[in-house]
Amino acid sequence: MPCEVKSCVFIHHLQAKTTASYTDSSDDETSPREKTQVNSKGSSDFCVKNIKQAEFGRREIEIAEQDMSALISLRKRAQGEKPLAGAKVVGCTHITAQTAVLIETLVALGAQCRWTACNIYSTQNEVAAALAESGVSVFAWKGESEDDFWWCIDRCVNVEGWQANMILDDGGDLTHWVYKKYPSVFKKVRGIVEESVTGVHRLYQLSKAGKLCVPAMNVNDSVTKQKFDNLYCCRESILDGLKRTTDVMFGGKQVVVCGYGEVGKGCCSALKALGAIVCVTEIDPICALQACMDGFKVVKLNEVVRQMDMVITCTGNKNVVTREHLDRMKNGCIVCNMGHSNTEIDVASLRTPELTWERVRSQVDHVIWPDGKRVILLAEGRLLNLSCSTVPSFVLSITATTQALALIELYNAPEGRYKQDVYLLPKKMGKSYLNQSLLQFQ
Image (cartoon, rainbow, N blue to C red; front, side, top):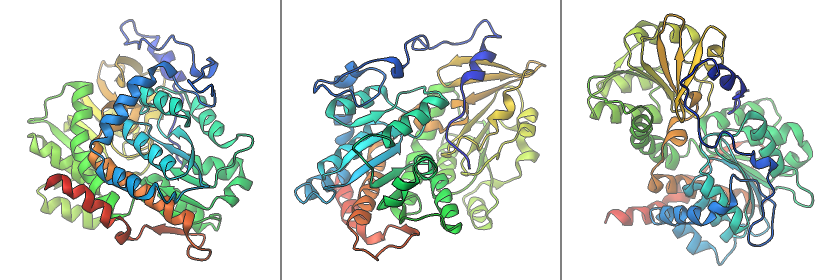
C-alpha cells in the first residue's frame, strides 16, 4: 500500500554535491524527540517543535474560527449534550489552524483526543504548540523524517492507560498502523472516519479482503467534501502554492493537469482563468467528456510532456508521472502534486547518483540531469497546497463539520445500524450546518 512519507536522508546526501543549495535555519536545531518540553499545566504528553510558540498559534486558531461558521455552529449547538463523551479519538490529519478548530470542537463535545500529522510538511508548528498547551496530546512538527512520522503515530496509539475507540484519518496511514501493529485495539474501535481518496481506497481494500472488522465512514465521497473542499479549496489554493514557491506567471503557460475529478476541475478552472493553456489527462470516459465540454483538450501525457511548462497530478493513483516522463520534460518544467498520496509522481526514481538535487527554497528542489536540464519539483511530490501554502478556512469548515458529524454518528449509533463495511455519511445530516455557512453570504 502507498504511504504518505518517504525518507529525506538521501536528498540531503545529494544536496551535499552542490555548493549553492538552500538551507533552512531550522536544519541544525535539535530534534523535538530529543527535547524535554512541558506546557503550563505541567504535562509533557506531546512532542512539538517549540511549546513557546503556543501564544502565536492560539491567534492563528482564533483567526480561523472567524471563517468556520458551520463547525462553530455545531460546537455551540452540541456542546451541552456532549455527544462524544467517552470517545477517545486518535487522529492523523494535516495539523493546521483549521484542523485545530476541529480538534477543539471534538474536545468541547466531550472527546479525548490524541493527534498526529498525515504529512511531514503540512504541520504549522505554532498551531501544534497551541494544541499541546491546551492539553491535547499532539505529536507533529514540520519537516519530520520517515522515522519521525511513524514514531509520532505510534506515540498517539501506544500509551499506557488510554486506548482509542475512534479513528479519524486522512490517507489511511494511522488506520494501517493500528491494523498491523495493534490488532487488539483495531478490533475494539467503534468506527473509522476517513477523508481522503487514498485512505478510502485502502479501506475498501480491507473490506473486500474481509479484514475490516469495524464500520468506517467515507467522508471523501460525501457530497459536502466532494462538491466543496475538493473543488473550491483546490481552485484557490493551487495558485497560492505555485506562486509562493516559484513566482511563476500563468498567462501563456502550457499546463497539463492529470485527472479531472473534483480536484482536477478546481485546478483547471483556476489556471485557465489566469490565462494558462490547459490540457487534461483522464482515463474515466465521463470525466474526460466533462473536460472536453468545459473547453479543455484531453490528451495522453506521453504525447505532450515535452511541451509542458507545468505538470500537475490530481488522481490519487500511483506513478502517474514516471521517470520516463520526467526524462522527457523540458528544462524548467514545474512538477507538483495536488492529490493526497506522494506516490503520484515517481520521486523515488529521481534519487539516483546521476541526478543532482539542489534545494533552492523551502519545499522547492531543482533536479538536475547530466546535460544540465532542470526540473522544478515542489514539496518532493507531496500535497502542494498544504505543504507550500494555506487553504481557505471557510471551505475546510464544511469538511471538518462532516468529519465531526461522522464521528458522532458512528460513536452513538445503536448496535447493528452499521456493519463491518464502508459507508457514506447521509446527505441530510450536513444540511443544517451548510445552511449556517450560507448565512455568511446573505
